[in-house]
Length: 291
Image 1 (cartoon, rainbow, N blue to C red):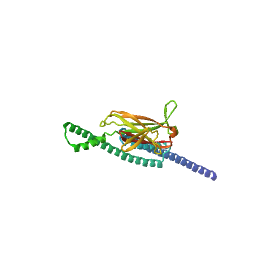
Image 2 (image 1 turned 180 degrees about the horizontal axis):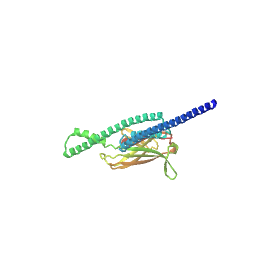
Image 3 (image 1 turned 60 degrees about the horizontal axis):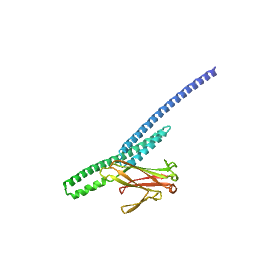
Image 4 (image 1 turned 135 degrees about the vertical axis):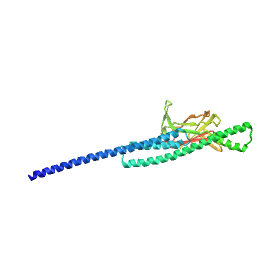
């Protein structure tokens, strides 16, 4: 009789323990799901902040400032970090904290860079205002025959600086030429037959329109000018160039594309530098790496 009661008591205790274990498991799973939901929400917030940074960079890049290269590089860094965040399959406190700290760093970098862009834009606008005012004063003085040579020298110098042509959106693509003559992008030195150089001459109403000669200088990793077509004298320096083109510039934004043939057998692996000389001034530089 006593054994039956003892067994019954044990059964009751075990049942209670089982119920408590199930309740604890349910509670733990609920807490875990709630925690994961909170972490996923934090992850979504961080992505939204990164998306916001990309939008800010896009807006500034669209303004076509002289700092576009830095802006594009910073934007690419944000996108890379955002993609890394997206690739995280399961968020944790440590990863969220790491990403939060990085976002703060990127935001600070964004503030600093955009501040520099705004300052540069302000200075450019101020310079343009000065140039326009200077040009108006010069024209008035010439019409009236006023002899203010000292003031004129300062104003003419400002106009000369502002009238220099500027180049943006400089890109270079290495390409191989198929038997049909069609070109296809490649990053391999042994397959590269052509360098496609593209850039845009910015609008400038203060310079003289007409034919503008551009020289393309391509140097390999050893500093040797490849596919040399001749040489020019720039100041006291003789410079060998890889290609040249004449551009009909009418004081508006002008797109330029130059296809430069090279001998693939002479190509070597490494970084190639590309320099653009326009109207006697070096207006653009970039690099491309061949594997």
